[in-house]
Length: 238
Image 1 (cartoon, rainbow, N blue to C red):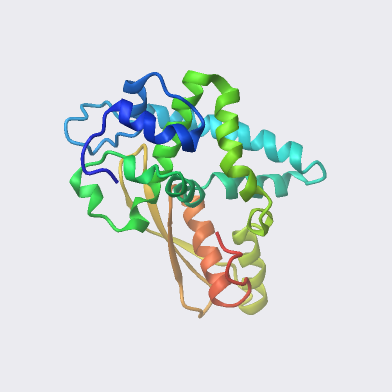
Image 2 (cartoon, helix red, strand yellow; image 1 turned 135 degrees about the horizontal axis):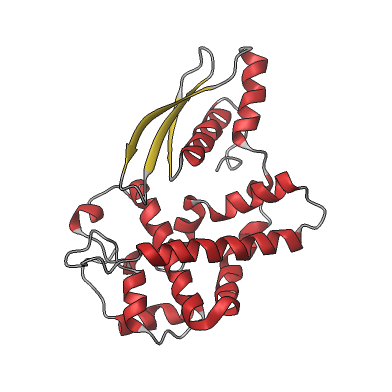
């Protein structure tokens, strides 16, 4: 992540190729890539734009999976959607397009381990989508989104079963009891929380995972148990 605040024009040049969009509103673009922790941000950060970008991304991906998989039931469509819009997928794409190195943050954020900065990379990518949408409309945002999300949509991961459902069935087989989920911690502001949740199945060792919501953390913890115990192979987890 950037150690100094880049100009909007410099950001526009850096992102023109990866996004396929020529940004004209430099101030808005700079705001989209400024975290609230950045010194002197004075509230000029990506929080509001992240809100909009999240909705634009969700609409585009929901429309895409609905049209691409016409025979898929609602449950499978939900799994595919969730796999494509979760924080890990967004952070991966942020890295792929070089966005991570352009995000302006405070020094305390830059000292965090990479795994703890997943949400920041994901949020900044959503804010970038909002910036594209506000300038170029839905079609411009859709072109950018499908460029990076469409190849990921056909992976086996996107169509996997729900981890919590899978774990519950496995837990009944091996212990006769349902999994027990426990909230171990909650960090971050109300608008951008990070939950830490553990899951225990009978006498098996608990697994711990984090997520942007309790459900996401529970899904990640369930997937961790399934992979560790050999129910799922590596690559099937989130």
